[in-house]
Length: 210
Image 1 (cartoon, one colour):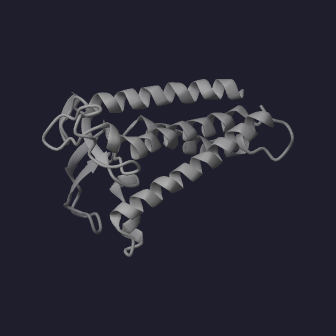
Image 2 (image 1 turned 120 degrees about the vertical axis):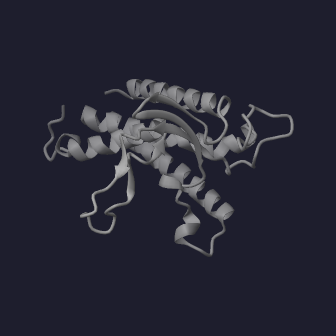
């Protein structure tokens, strides 16, 4: 898989990711949802930190939420530079297609969420009780590097009470799948799953590559 094809794939994923986020951000009030199927909803939430809303300050209490947000965003930028170099190097070396494809997916997803974190705070006003506007006259809801990641894909495949005989969580109300995510998250997860499932093809021990 060539670098040019990888860049086209990255561009397509970024366009789908950003178009979906901008549409939801400018058409939905925060926590508003639309049921597409009984097991799939468009449910608008914003993520201020890492996966499942976790923040860097949750692990390092001495860091404020805002400093933690900047630290997390800068870490993501450094990480994506490394991933970009990995992708460039893999294509130049003629690495297996599955490896290049996985790296490209991870890069596209990471870049998609970085765009939110870096720019959305200045590009949109907030979505609390209102539909946000793009480039509002009064300015955005926060400063650069303090944007929130837009999530909207929600798949509540099962909702119900767990059997009483289950340890710890028996009898509690349970939803599967609980996390709300976006297209960028799907790309990242798919890339990592490919690296795990096709590990031997992605990292062959001999010189022969597909």
